Image 1 (cartoon, rainbow, N blue to C red):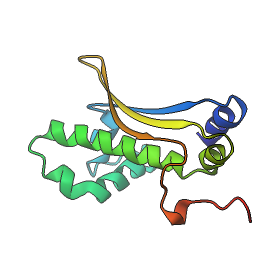
Image 2 (cartoon, rainbow, N blue to C red; image 1 turned 30 degrees about the horizontal axis):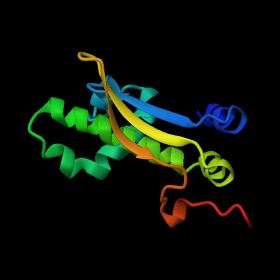
Image 3 (cartoon, rainbow, N blue to C red; image 1 turned 180 degrees about the vertical axis):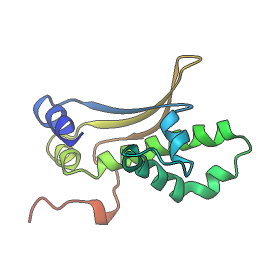
Length: 135
């Protein structure tokens, strides 16, 4: 993913990067269980981390569908933040005030895209994640 991101941001100079999730996502459903899926477990661990961080909020929802859909949204939000934490994005924000980062979720049955987060160039990043390119 980082090589694609770097090519898009540094070489192509894209102005927008979109992270798009899918309501009802099977990977999110799988990550919210203790089922073993073999090598996929490593990939699901990132989603499990999102669940761990937001478990109280997610578990308070009344239906399984609501819990999965909220987890999809939270995962998209966390993944957009993960992009903002990369040197690729931070350097581009410093050098050219781009790209904008967007987090969307798509619902298959109605075809509507729901924006859940946007990060403008230079958006706040906690100090521990902010790179100092001047040293």
